[in-house]
Length: 298
Image 1 (cartoon, helix red, strand yellow):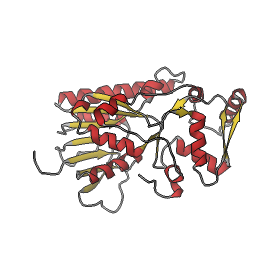
Image 2: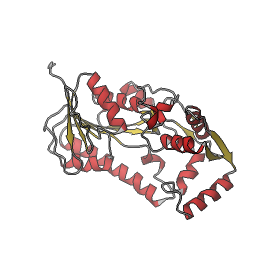
Image 3: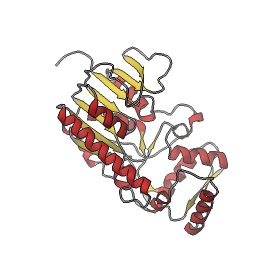
């Protein structure tokens, strides 16, 4: 085997998963070309080169690398990858378990998202086959850990600002929050595991717990220790509808509220067998949830 350092091309490198993956790659001795629309201004470190760009116009810094990673929007990467002049034996791309959970949603936008993810995965697999490469798709559940996600960090910010958070009493559907560093470790393993080629893996967190208990742990980790208020489900829905009508609440479709009662649970067994995947239990800290609490620990 050659002694040369392996080279990776990473898209979405300044995002929450991308940043964790960069740290993993660098620790493992990879040379990295990192692509982002907003790269840091320091020019990187030895073995790490930053490139400004985005889909669909970005050109690979080199046509040859050992692995290409996508940590950003899967649909945009899939279109780029299908057309790119790139020779990389492995491709690892992040999608989402929304492919499964929103396929039958009442909201047309959520169904469209699931269809987009499904089509993008198929496009990546087909493009890899056409160029003789191996592709792996990774589907995380609720991501946390870098204080940059749109779910648990959003809950933390609202609760910290208002002193509490409101949930319907039936918000007991099971969830599996997953730390960004566990996702990064899985991506690095997928780029090197022979069994991972041509496969998609769900990447749930290491603990399954009811939605309201998950929120309780989020609030317990915050400096002000906000309270969790549980209200009757009909009252919650009425208040939510009034907020929507007044234009005070956006980005929370009715299907999202209904899913608070549903179990969204995925099997980590295949990822455990092929990737050595061993995600941590859900033990959040303030630094994992709030951007102004300091950098999140690994």
